[in-house]
Length: 377
Image 1: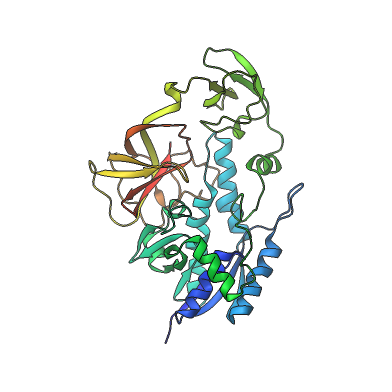
Image 2 (image 1 turned 30 degrees about the horizontal axis):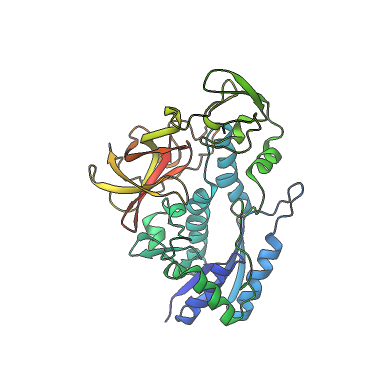
């Protein structure tokens, strides 16, 4: 008897083709729409109803079962609250990474397996084999960076068939099959929330932020910001300070509500040749120190040669960035499952990199294989 696969169908072309491919391969396919966010924001209508209907249309076209899981409460707690908390602390989090860890490859997987599925599948541009994660074939669309915190067990229960294809092939296949989503544009913005800017989203969550000084490399106040949480290390645009040479955000002091900028691209505060990581997660065994690897320090960033120093052990099962049911924030010493920051990982970069932001992730690769990574501290 063929295995039952629950496909996370977002209403986009990638997950639509995923369902079609798996049905063609002989799996018993059920499409599942995850309702993670439905709130409209000022000037922005959440597209969840349209996405749900698009996913349902494709399921009908393919002749597969279809259902919806409502994860809105969990998404708010695990992803949105985490993201807001990190910005308040002056860091720059990645909600897509948290969504994959906590919702798609944990909550969705666990619910699907309890519901009778043998496997889950998603439309990610990445490849999975024997519990290992690899970059997608289409390097311009590769999403393995966002998946480095997925557990080995979840990967063993997951399929990602479009990871073996190029985006152009996925579009062509959707058109050939006449799928309702064949020409639908790719989603943008915050994961599941939609095409809304992070500043607008944070303003809706937190309200107007206190203004403060923008100080240059000579200690002069050259302007005023509208909230330090909105600025990222290395940022150039949106500073609204005078003409002349462009300014870059060098650092932030959340206690004094000060944003420090520089016009000097060689400013040592902008460059790093060693990166400290916390909340380290390895897929499989812990890689040995002293060996040459590559790290991606931001999504779509280049792969940078690196060595691991002071390698943190493999995380315990259930390791998570998400907060306990407590008032503690991510910046405290422990998170769920007793994970600790006591043994951080140090990445030694062969060439210094500019504008590395705390809260973003560094993902370690060995050729095309994702070994794991951690959060930049």
